[in-house]
Image: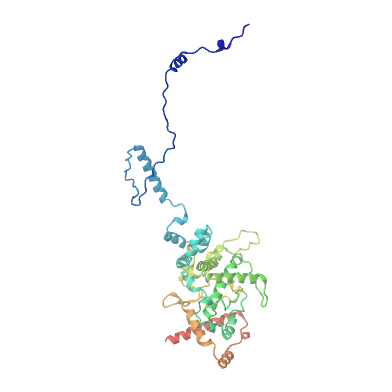
Length: 419
C-alpha cells in the first residue's frame, strides 16, 4: 500500500481561508495605541468651610395594612412587658418598705437571704423597717424593755464617773451573782442603773424563751449550784449576751428579741389550754374525764385568748394584769412566771398602764456624774468608807432588791428636785 505524500496529507483550504488569502495581497491598515500609564484624577480639595451634608429626605409613608397590624401588635406586647413585674425588687421602694413592715422580724430575716440585692435593700432600710414593725406589733414591750446604751454613746464628761472603781464596786452586786445572766462589760455598755437593769432584763427574756420547751412539756429546768460554772451554762449566757450586744446596733435584732418574748408571754398564759395536764387513769382503767376550763385557769391574766395570740401583737397587754416589779433572779422563778413586763405600773385613777422607763438613762447618768466624778484623794477615802461591802449582799434576790431600791431612790430624788 502506497503512503500519502506531504501535499496529499495537507487539508484542503476552506472558503474563509481562500478569502483571507485573496485579501492578503492588499495593503494592511494599522491602529496606533498609546501604552503610557494613566494619570490619577485630582482629588477634590477639602475645604474647612464646607459643612457635612444632612439628609433631609423624608421617609416614604408606608401605608401597608399588614405592616400596621404588626406594629400595633408589637406596641401592645411592649406595653404588657413594661407593666409586668418580673422581680421582687422591681416594686417601688415605698411599696416594698410597706410590705416588709407587715412581716415578722424572723420573716424579714428569712427574706434577706433571698439574694444579695434584697439583703442590701433590707440592710439600708433596716432602722425604718424595724421601727415600723415594732410600732405595729411590740409598741408596749419596746417601752417596757428598752435597750442599754453603748459606752461609746455616753458623753465624755460622764465616762470617768462610770469607770470610777467606787461606782464599779457598788454595782458589782447587780452583775456577778446571777447564774443565768452574763455580767456586762463596763468598757462596752453603760453601767448606770437603768442600763444595768435593761441588760439584765433582755438577758432574762432570752433565757426564759430558751426554756419554754421544758415548761410546756413539764420537764425540769437544769439548775446551777452556787459556785459551779458548767460549760453549757457559759455557752448559753454568752450567746444571749452576744444577741443583746447585736441588738444595740441592729434594730431588726432588737425586734426579734421582742418577738421571742411576746411568744413566751402568750405561750405561758395559754399553756394550760394548749398543753393540758395529764389526768391519771382510774383504777379500773376507765377513760379519763375532761377537766373543766374553769379548773384549768381560774384566773387568766390580761384575759388573753387564742384570738389575741393569733394577731401576734401586744395589744392585750394594755388590759389590767399583774405587775412585774421583781426580776427573775433565778431560773427557779420561771415556773411561776406568767408575763414579765417590767418598768410600768397600773394607775387606778386613769385605768391604764404608766411606763416610767423613758428618760431613766439621763437621770441615772446625771446622778452618777454628780456623786462619783473622780475627785481628790481625801474625798475618795470618805466616799469609799460609805460603800457597802459586796459580801453583805450575797444572794441574787438581795442584789435584785438593791438594784430596784437604788432606782427608786434616784426617782424620788429627781422628783424632789423638780418640785
